[in-house]
Image (cartoon, rainbow over all chains, first blue to last red; front, side, top):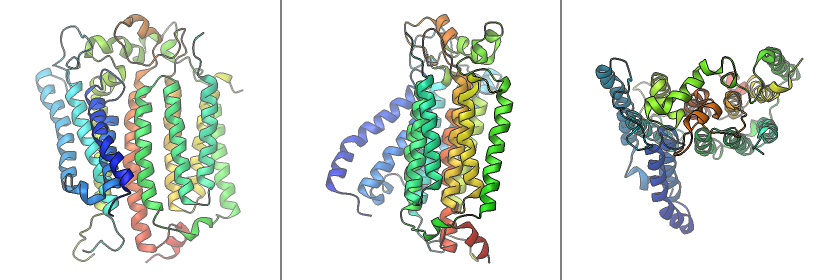
Length: 146
Length: 186
Length: 124
């Protein structure tokens, strides 16, 4: 898997950064515009998979390997649980939104726990789907007993 | 003149129906996979038409990933057994079961609210329903102008935790099935 | 007997029936995975159709924008609750498809075919 033709590689190198920025925008602006952690995470995973398909798998696994993806998967899930538990301890109810207050004015910080929850879910979904893709693409018949 | 999506929704559901029939009857597995992605794309357009941009974005991106994953399974494995047809009795049973499902649902849907007039649009009881309460209170009490995110991560965040657990379990299952290092006596 | 207003729901159930037929009759593992995906799409479509609200303001997404009147928004926007549930169910569907594809790959590795009837006869 040496990657695709130079045309595909050049275009991928141009758009990959914008895909990452768009994914981060969808995650961070989930409570102000359509989007949120679930689609944003899938967009980030799609950007990494595009790099995999264009440049070959070794190029990306040097940056984000299967082990790293698993670690980020667990970190995102535990961060979501942590937010719910700790803020629930201070607020009295599981997942109580103690950060929200004042009059909302369409700002990034208005959502209270919604923004950190979106970031945690974005990391979790993106990492676990990219990890599933890596596991599927690393699989070769007969490789089970290496 | 307000926009009425009813005709477009009918046309797109017909497209989904035809696409799914092509998907399950195609001889080539690659055609099958691409047809089912077309069905998902039609679903995302329907979501845009009936006022659900969140679902539209998610469905488009997920459909792309599904296509990549499914092409991974079919493209390197040519299988000559695609043409193996089930027996006539099995086909008849399957069709009869599917028809039974449609008839039961058609009878059961008689009491359902008509398309375009959900319960929260009702003049008498609509204001007390869950959806209307969420729409009213989402911006004031969670600070989130996007009511879907308000429901997903504030009013019903416990649901979201459960669903994150489900996808975590599914992906861990994928890792376990495809692990490279087997057990000692495997 | 069928009310015209519930016709879209019945069409969604028709799509579900196609998926049920595929799962119950097809012999190929990939066709069965595709049948399950079609059923997921049909159920998501059914829930999605229930969120639509026809109002005098046209189709209003449940997202408040700056300058929009909150009371008019609450009176015309689509139902957010099923939308939130569909949003997560779509992503779960992707995870489940990855799991089923992993099973299909293992089956193909062990038996060399996607055909379920031959896999059953090759047991052992």
